[in-house]
Length: 204
Image (cartoon, rainbow, N blue to C red; front, side, top):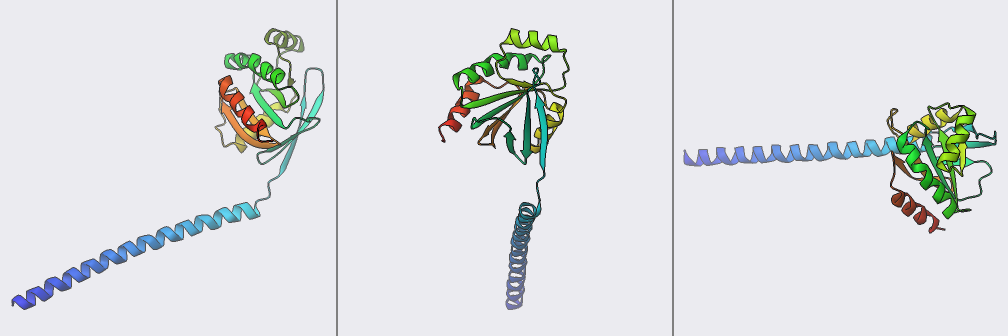
């Protein structure tokens, strides 16, 4: 009887151990399959997705036009020789935006010939005379687009960066050799922005 009980217990232990091992193996297989599936999807997206190019026209208060072409997170702006591009989406009614303008103007002066600063006016349609006064008051010394396609450029940038549609401005984006480097949501400390600018400039 004792031998029978001992054999029964041993058989049960072996059975339970086997189930646990199978369960563990099954879990590993499932995880591996999921990882492989995700890798395949990523490869498919990378290899088969053709990213379209979008071209917009930027126009400043003096009706100077610059075309901007965006492909994925790459940007090209006509008649720009500088390697570093700083885009700043702003509005004249936005206090944080106004607070950033003098710093952007200082950066433009400090890194003259090295960075191209462009303001892009969004969700704002002030009169031309009011814009002249605004630029004078805040010392704007860089290209500012007031064109009709500004909001389209902003919406595409938000989409490419996977940002919420109701993202508050200012939004600042830094590019090096046309390639996305970093973006800053809301007012950004000038020290942080200049630190990143120095980093991209030193990569030359």
